[in-house]
Image 1 (cartoon, rainbow, N blue to C red):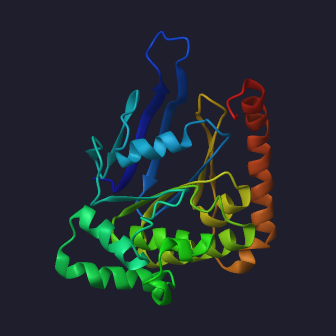
Image 2: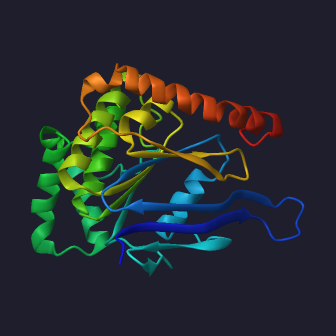
Image 3: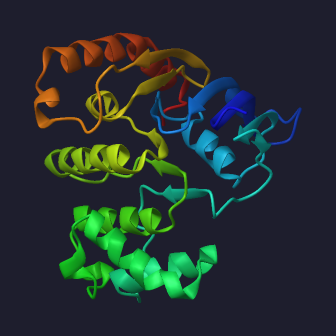
Length: 266
């Protein structure tokens, strides 16, 4: 049985059938994501990228199609197999960084005897050992995202879903966090599905990039990035990355224009 995520003809809509206000966000998305691969989803706003992540995570039911993980249908949340890193800060403000990680492990049902060791290992992996007792309000934006990544890593799930996790950060910080994520992928071989609007971020991080059309979102093409992980900083300034970024721009330009003209990107 093939390992990984299988997305077969997935569609998503909001509103009742026949309702003139019904919005079809995603249409007939089909994609195979082998175990250990990092796939970026990129496309205009409103094209169903985040909706697809919710469906993979079992947080939403598709209007059509199906998702399986290692051949098993996704019918609800899978906290032991799938973890999520959100764009917005999802840390509990009344808990320290360390206790935020422990809370995630408790929700997952991890054995109490393992939680401390796993929290320490996750903090070490993202370089936040010295900030374990800090509260979210005491952290910079980049450090909050590191803390969220640490919480997700501590869960030791095989799949990590990331919905624009670095979008609110300055460009320099997001590039450094992207390097760190590439190192984590090389180390752990997790399967990662990463939503982004940044062309450079997609090329720097992804093994493959699924390019979506304007709403209703369809997968227009799949772009392969043939570069091993961890990605070296020199890849960022290479002609190879520039060429792939330019190809992405050409693929997305008309789709973004269409989304703006139809109001889907508002």
